[in-house]
Length: 499
Ligand code: BES
Ligand code: MN
Ligand code: ZN
Image (cartoon, rainbow, N blue to C red; front, side):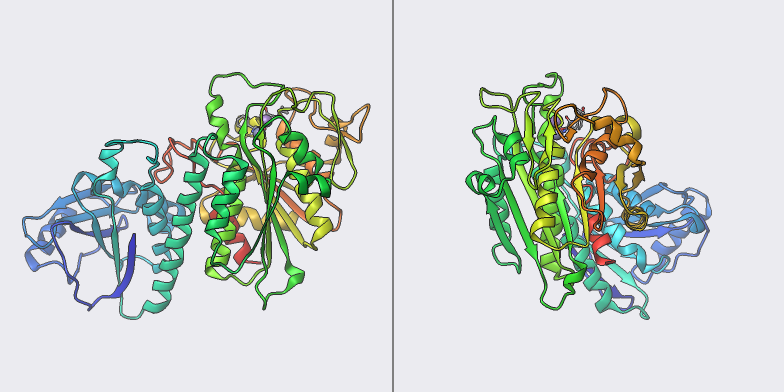
């Protein structure tokens, strides 16, 4: 999608596929738009004066024109000015595409004289994210309704006092970020026969070819040499061997004391292993690498935008599947760093690979903060549904920063407690810890408290459980519930750019 910001006086070319979009608060402002001919302006004004359009939130009216040089006007209701915020802008923009699609509009010119320019990025986000489709595997005419008439051009007209250069740069960044989120969504959508640990790393390698980032993959024998036994244990049932991808982004001018490590759960398919999951809905478990895809996307954006913060991305990749060589209940793993874990359920596999990756990060780098992101527990969906992700960690300030970043990007988080009492739930008779707690008890917290065992006290750490938000979010216009969301990419970028 092409996006540009121009000053009011600039002349623009219109055609039959272009509509003028006017965002309007619930107050009856007189419409004054240089683009409209006088009689068109009077016509639009009369619609407002007759209360045919109110400006209420989500009130959208498309008015087609007969003139050959402009398809029509989209009046976009924003609701009350004092109650407006970025997330509303995103959602309202997300609903615009239903109108443009049906009316063969591929280009919109937005009169941004009635609304602050801070709402330009969330508007773009709403449009790009809501237009996402995944049809790589359809051989004919799929999604025809959605494919026709996507918006390919958006122009914002702003008042002559605005700095166009800054706004255009912002737009360019927003487009890059959203395109990356959509790439992440496609990676998550990909079936597990196509997306294995091996093909995931190949894909990533191609992606980073010309970017200032060190790319490294540990294959099975290197995992063995390093003693990354948590990752090896989970992966040993599959002929698709486990791997760990290491992405180092260290801008030369950056302060290495601020180093951040982000870890993403990369289970390319989670059958549950020997503790096999029920078959209904099991196909959804191809999304169990969402955290990994989010870390990949985040690293890509960092390197593309050349943000000035050193970040190491760790992506452990495995397929959790039963076989004659699979991990067994009762097995005891000597994890990276030496702690022992009794595996009471092979379906609690994500924590094993993340724990190893985090221990590796602390041994081989000097992170100040670690964030891990994972589709870790079904219990998180039971607790929070699909409207926010869970967050747990060992530092109040860090949690606050993340909550704040999430509110800003519309990827909301909700904190769970992580009191040491919960450590009682993972006591093991035979090893240092067990990988699960009692059935049905606080499973999201148990996942967090397990991970906490692998974080040294001087490191600030937070764990984000995206089991409920990575896929299937309904009722939010820019997140089609059929598709993954890419939840976490914009949040991590927002948080990192504040570091
Ligand atoms: N990948 C799943 C988490 C999950 C389950 C996400 C269902 C979405 C829907 C994870 O590996 C898992 O299986 N977790 C178990 C842990 C349990 C065995 C302690 C769970 O949450 O049921
Ligand atoms: Mn599992
Ligand atoms: Zn899993």
